[in-house]
Image (cartoon, rainbow, N blue to C red; front, side):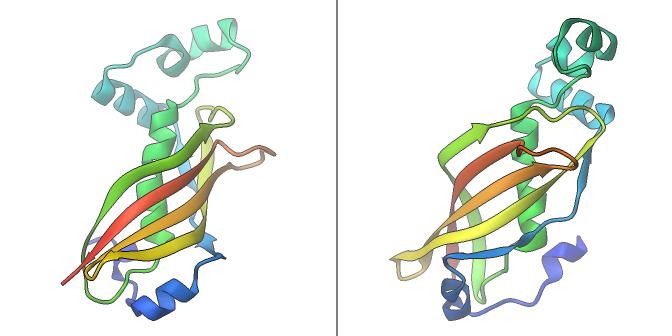
Length: 159
């Protein structure tokens, strides 16, 4: 099991007290051409801006290939595992969607990204179901603008 999943759990009360606060920042994650190519194969999107470094350098303003926006978004999972606390008694958590998601800047091949997480809401929908809203910004190392900003909704279930 990945070490980031072995954090000690926090109480629901402690978690809810984190609302309005930045929870933390993940480690840097490399988005290299190999990762981009594998992702392109999985989603069957081989547009040249993602998979053809020479053509992307020659024909785009990016100067290199860029990651799919959805690849950057999908890295939110590992970033959140590194940062977000686990609540005592949790049986599972699921993605519920996004209130807002914007791809602000392209992630060039070879860049590193990290997630910055702020818990905005944590409300019980049912006695054993918590809805959380987390604002996240994915930063690109050395860049002023983030790769993406999102308000991410999760559902957390308890035993």
